[in-house]
Image (cartoon, rainbow, N blue to C red; front, side, top):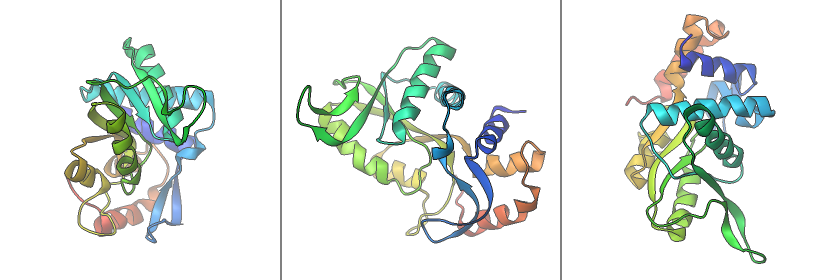
Length: 219
């Protein structure tokens, strides 16, 4: 089983990736749904962090700090930082933002490693749907220090056209912010994993392919 097949299998086992008939926030009817809130145990986060670490390493990315946007990005950045050290012996810092700035004690907008000029920062997120999180955190990060965004790593690239325009959220991130987005897997990998028998869901293959044909983009 390939690393991508292993990750798709891991998502299904955790209940993060499910197949059926779902109405998305966009209003589209989709045959699959991804809910990363279903990662709920230390063992799951440890394994998830390993997949993030592999993706970062395999794409040749280098960072001083992993940043996790609050709230879902917080445990993701932490487990990724742990795994990079545990699997590859590379020590990186991590930090995350506060939804509201702290006005007592040490104060500030961030928790964790203090960002400094020249830092390479990788943003760690779950699934990129609209790019809203990136749009919100970039000004905060660049206000904190003169940093370099080395990239953004997500679990799944839906490779799906936005409601407006012909680009996916990943393509828009590159166009609008100059940020390269890397994913552990994409929708094509999920379809391939079903076809290979790595995960159940053969009865949804036709619907998956039709959804891809209706809303998908190619890179």
